[in-house]
Image 1 (tube, rainbow, N blue to C red):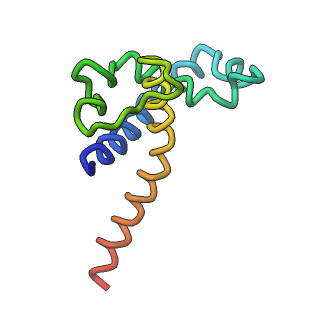
Image 2 (image 1 turned 60 degrees about the horizontal axis):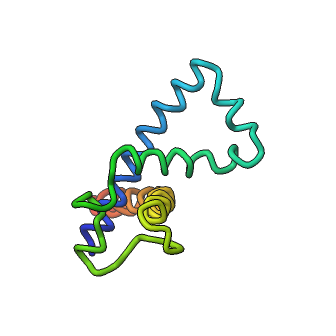
Length: 117
């Protein structure tokens, strides 16, 4: 289970790195502000990019990194939507784990830095 949590934290880090590149490319071609100004899409743009990240990297199913149904007996599928539901759930989890990663890194910095005092 800890391996899954660590995997999700690392995926959050990789996703943030990929998003930095995507944002800079979209800013270069002057499309980023246009996308963010669309009412429904703008507020959920990070989640939409996370879904695209999950689909392109094929994280779920058939021996993927997060094939949880075959490894822990748990499923990431939501609303009985099959592979689409699993991909949406994985995208939500990756976006949700970004603050967890920030908190873990902060705690490690305080723990390591506090030993010398």
